[in-house]
Amino acid sequence: MNLLTMRVITPSILLILAISLFWACDRRVVQEPSLDFGYEYFPLHVGDFWEYEVDSFIYRPGQNGGVAIDSIQSQLREIVVDTFRDNANLLNFIVEQYTRRSENASWQIRNVLRLARNEEQAFRVEDNLRFLKMVFPPKADRSWPGTNYFDEFTAIPVAGGDIEMFKGWESTIQTRDGFWQGGDLSFEEVLEIEIADFNTFIERREGKEYYAKGVGLISRSLTIFDTQCQICCGGDCGDRPWEEKAELGFVIEQRLIRYKN
Picture 1 (cartoon, helix red, strand yellow):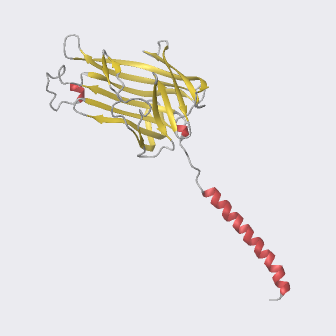
Picture 2 (cartoon, helix red, strand yellow):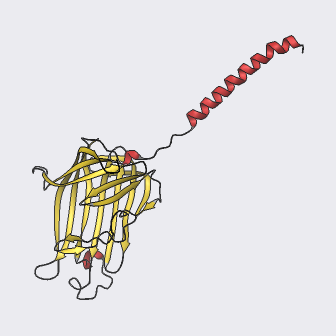
């Protein structure tokens, strides 16, 4: 091969190599998956609202002895109405919470709370208690103390008594890609979080929450029981299930029925 031939071929080879490298790099960029931090499991926008059906069962000492169980059906509505920045410059979303006893009843305001989210955590502040609801990115088996920002032994009034309902709470992600269906609604890409699973002979704390991507909270269940085995069982609970030996507490089942995001 003479020098003239090399002068002709060499630029062509370099051009082909450059094009090949360009396409190789381009394919690498396209095929590389983007990192999803999971923020859409906790969406926040002014005007968002969620409506839930709520079934509650309240356990309390009966007026004539024994344990009385009050069953209550209601609806809950939460709507994001405004924002503000706190002392740490974190954007907080103000949420008005309403309740009503039936579909045809008028909404009555119950509470005002706030939601917030930064790059690593999501919060819910209710009755001056700051709950750590989620961590990002959410991964299966990842755990954190849901009551990290307040004393887990805080007592809450329930049916004439006080319960340390947050004792032993520890949040753990069960799955990130589940499926949920309730009534006319169904969702894929559902995040399941166990918020509590604490059980002793005299205390039961159990709870789960489900969040749909792009929607937020779609379901919550919470069981809080205390007993001294006196009112229910004359001092001997034996192997009775909690539904029989609970003397004070409640069970709540909350399911999404309508929403706007």
